[in-house]
Image (tube, rainbow, N blue to C red; front, side, top):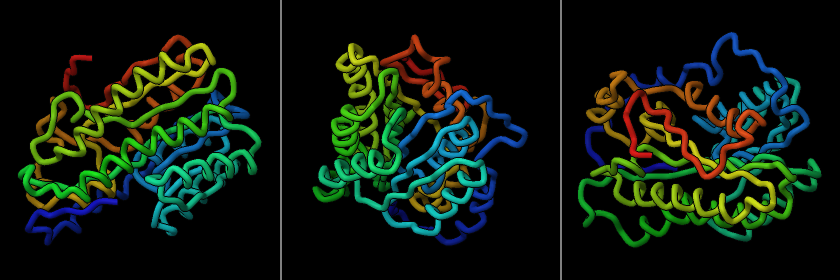
Length: 280
């Protein structure tokens, strides 16, 4: 769900090795922290979303993933989850439309009869060196996919989420430090942080927790597709750890926020970014 306007994309294939890293840490042992739970994950077909789906399933949850285009990727996530002995429902929908988001929640209810964890993870970005290059159509689409969809899904899911349920939103380090080449994307991620904090207050009396995870540079298909070769060569090297991370290093934060270990945590953002210090 990404498109790059940058030049010099030749030679990017060599970075695909970063996508071959397993989506779950070798030797990770689940402890049934999400037993008998049902989790809905947008963008669950690849990258961070796939890793979260696999960690959740190893912790005992059944999974529903939402994706837009890649049937093969969705099928692979389904296979991985089912190999953990859990059920995986795949839903192909454009989440930028509210009617589709309502239908997604209806499908989850019909298939599982419950929803315990909503992970709003899907996102898109296009790289632009100048604000003048960002069209009205691009700006609108980026906000529709990254931010509007969260409103739509949360609005529909609140009716189904169980008492003690939780919502986890994927923010980004760029919500805090900005990004000169991802202006509209950064704006959506800043909105997500504010939305997370506000919704947490709004639904606290319903015994629903709302938190977010703000990854730093992470190797995902979106990154490989969106950035040119020169950007990829230095991707993540400006972090204190001098490297980009992998989805399996981010997903455990979602496990923590989804289970009872974080029962006294709401309206917060966890930063998984290789050592960058954020203001909050």
